[in-house]
Length: 84
Image 1: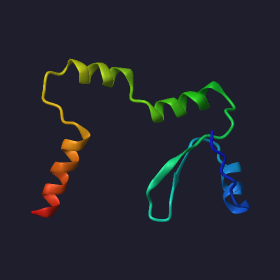
Image 2: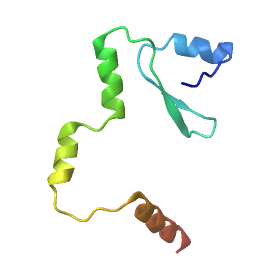
Image 3: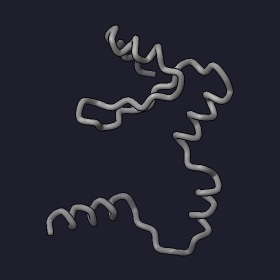
């Protein structure tokens, strides 16, 4: 695991967190998620639900018989829209 040392201002903000915190850079790009020490099973469950898709959604997507697209195909399509 990597270790990142935070400055005191950021550390203090994270110490006050009562739940899961989404971390973003100055441009608004998501960098990751910070989870304070789990105080309860509910805290842990909240993190898992935020990160992982719901099992019912996965089952539904697998059951639907429709065309799907790879990430590369979606990116290519989006690029083509920007070029138009």
